[in-house]
Image 1: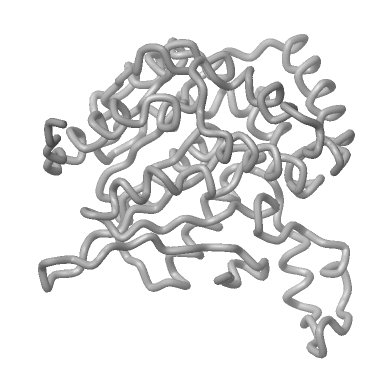
Image 2 (image 1 turned 45 degrees about the vertical axis):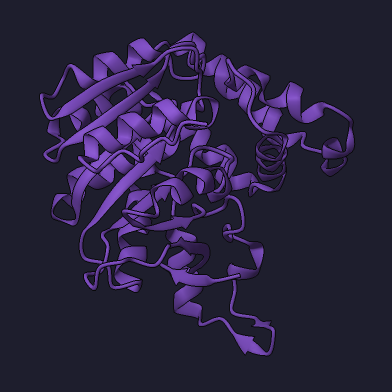
Length: 307
């Protein structure tokens, strides 16, 4: 599996490409996943768009197959016959779980891969990271797609209850949970309105179980916070590149109305709501999702052959 050093932390990444009939290189689309997930749930969308884009998928710091801030990095020690430089480990320890830090991670990843300008397709918490990236590095993005994103009002009691519940969820994640029959269906039920393939359900559960504790907990506090409630409306208003915001009609995590309100702040943000879907519209109704995305990107829709 390919890994790359991003700001001192090993990140998993992969390319999904198809040969181009033209000599000209295809543009790059970068996919950013949400909280406790990984690039795995973007693979089907990437394969569907690979005729028009070279698709870059990666796991955010501390999630999926990417490294978190392991205790091994806190001092300079021998690891696999090589020593971690003290200055590098100190830099890693300074990394936080603020979403702006994750936006800087993405910029560093693009630098490492020598990618100057890309398209972005991001989901949920990853869409918040992408929004911050758009405003910090606008010259690096052609167009962006934000799936299941929006703005919310600060509610001290509700946020405190969410943080407390989230802390319990992150702390008590026995690895044997994935072996219980049908637990993947129960786990992901809150995120869905329509069923998705079993492989997708199981992958999301596995990603949740292996997520780095500090990263999972830290991003709960930074994603759902008073600061985020105050800052994100301003960030949506500042977006300076054409952006599509896709919402799921029955999304309980980030209700569609939150997405509509965010899009209303900026004429460059186009809002689309996909009926009969929830927090994973790209998996629940892939055909409609891809149709909306292709229309926004102004690329040709695939021709359907009658059966």
